[in-house]
Amino acid sequence: MSAHAYFYDEGTWRPYKKNMIEQKFHIEGMKCGACAFTIEKHYMRLKGVKEVSTNYSKQEIKIRYDERSLHENKLIESITLLGYTLHKL
Image (cartoon, rainbow, N blue to C red; front, side, top):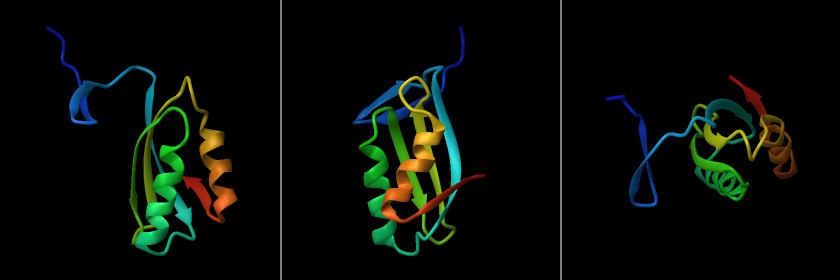
């Protein structure tokens, strides 16, 4: 029997898939809860993003996405349209 990691998605526990990546970034310019909400909403609209969580007091974001659908550069470049800068931790 093999061990599997799971995540909660839309009311169901699902196994993590091999192509899923979870990365943390520092976001310059995220200063309040409204900023965090805007950023989370932005990333959840990108194809391949499965989970986003922000911490505006630390100016950090954690993004879980499918590397087959989305490249890290797209995560970094797309947020500049909203006036934020993303740096990999």
